[in-house]
Length: 139
Image (tube, rainbow, N blue to C red; front, top):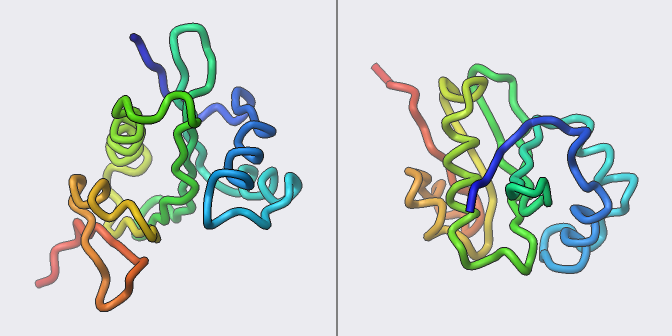
């Protein structure tokens, strides 16, 4: 199956994103549709689509495009899970031209540390949630 990725916010199915975040996640159960719309407006967003342009997944990044980026709301819609699409989406984000030189990428997760470790993320201190990937070289 062929997949496409885009940062085109106009293609996003915002209602489906909201429904998934509210019903299927531990981190966004209280997020209103208006709040999801605002987070999308103020983030660099990534949509994952099949060859028929059906949205399969979503993620967003809050960043200054130089020093720091925060990866958030990484989702693959329920019926498309278990096919490795989350890995494809994360790889696309980390290699995206506007983010490729970010010095520190951070995220929070309660249950997907193993996934993110495959991409070089490591736990931060004693936090059970925070993970980061640093490309900055300390002299």
